[in-house]
Length: 149
Image 1 (cartoon, one colour):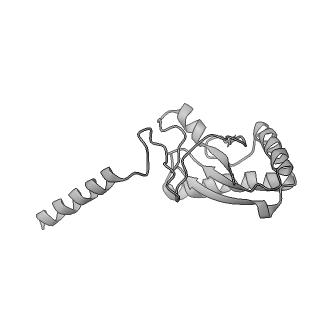
Image 2 (cartoon, rainbow, N blue to C red):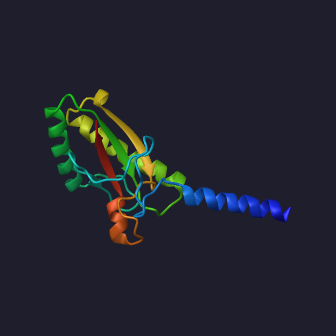
Image 3 (cartoon, rainbow, N blue to C red):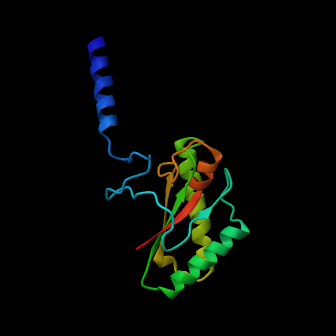
């Protein structure tokens, strides 16, 4: 029985050590299924307060700029990604990430971006921009990101 436990534990350690889901900085690596965490290249990210999906005036201004770009580039689509910091359970952060993505999606829709050009996904805490464990790092990770296709 003890040998079986040691074998299972060794196998788990091996599998975790060989996982290529994250690079040396702790950021997600794009492998077709999970995109690499990044800041907004074309469209700016929107940031949120701790445990909130409420849009600030600054967030609304950023979303207005993003909507103007999307409306001027009608051939582009966007995936609105919801992200969280590492605090909270996986389940809670997935739900909070979904609320954040939906808040941005709804605001963009209200600014004239067609629903057919947008989708949402929540990554919860899984794709941090900053792998640190400080408020400065966490504030960067609480965001909606806009992946343009």
